[in-house]
Length: 381
Image 1 (cartoon, rainbow, N blue to C red):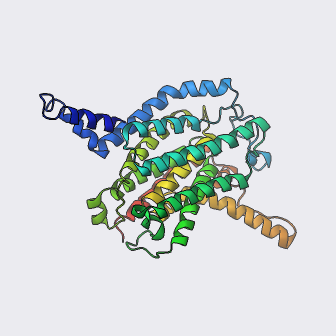
Image 2 (cartoon, rainbow, N blue to C red):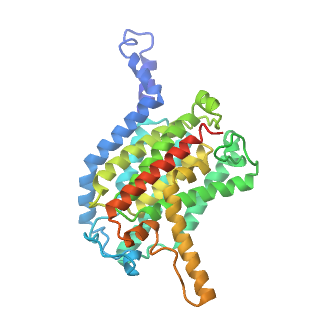
């Protein structure tokens, strides 16, 4: 909105005595300025609205008063500070602040609209899941089939839309790999499958990582910083040409969205750090993960997300390996066996005796290393 208002005022005073005094309005054309504005706006809004949202969630009794899956199975050592009664659905704060800041500072391009629409859909899915858990007072929530169906349909919609629009067809029809500057294939079917898997996988991976205070939001912040750089380069013709990465017209506005996500994430981490005053719940984790996946698709770098989000991949992979090996050994040996002491992976290390803050900090370090490797793909080709 600020971009359009600045453009309107600049054009209105053109040729008048006000043209020079208001020449600073041209600064709103720069993505860097608007990204900084979006980040600061989101951060300040989070700090201002955070206590109010937390108090509101407490009044509505939107709190986690049930055992999570790790505690239900008895696989997790009792924590020093109980998390029961802590308000959940804090993702409402993240999504509201993030979307509002992006709308205020970004140009309302098709890419931004697709991202915002996807975030709202996934936040709605997460809200429904959180609501089901609270009302049933169990960790069951929405069935995995419903989640996968909604996420899959969203990914399919994005893939088909991009494929049918001539200017974005290559985002789907050409599949890019990290460390390689040319498309490895031009299969539209494969591209659609990659798009769906990126959206579904990223959304669920962040959701599975959300199990310790500050873990999911902190790792999301780190990956968002990586995509702040990637989206800016993808939307800049000269930078993309120099680094030999796909140039995507209009992708620069996703940089503003990334900045808004970073500001909202930092503001939420203020309240979510140990001991957490609020949890993001599936309302936030599904939306944030989906946003990362969608942006990776829109800048033609879905597989770079696998590297940048290595911690998310490890968390999701630990769950799939644990379930798969348990079912296999139960069928072949008569008794299910486990690879990890507990899954997702962060609970495994808790079971080994690591303090919660140790797990979170060390996962941050690993996430930063993954981000550095992801950024190296810009130069190593």
